[in-house]
Length: 143
Image (tube, rainbow, N blue to C red; front, side, top):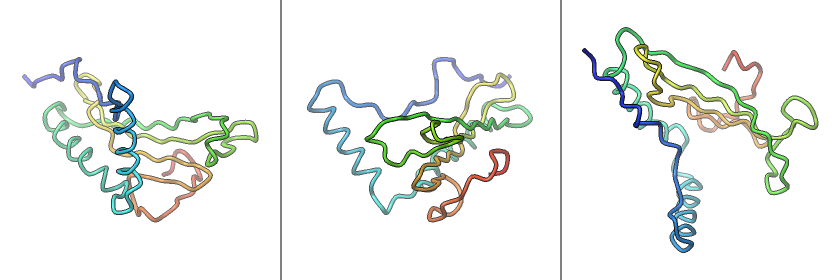
């Protein structure tokens, strides 16, 4: 029988700031420096997640892996977010986020995110394809 994922192994929700004010600022500053490093691309950051997906599929899938695709509107009306845009109409302000998640065919447990794409007024930024391409969103069903 295949080993099933423990329900206490949720997907990581990303970086977290440390609890005290000094360490919190330092971790925020370090993250900003990391994310604004021009020698690191989104597709390069995706490689460990893709590798983890392959390992998890071999371990937690019987016959095939399922890939769930989601497009979410992230609504923001905030003056400190100058890259938001009118998603569907002029008062629907924010970002468009696409996520593709591999899940187990045995129990539906999430295994790994394998693609993400954020659409803003500055362009479209994806973890797949050419990092320099600003792909327009024509249809959510066709990436």
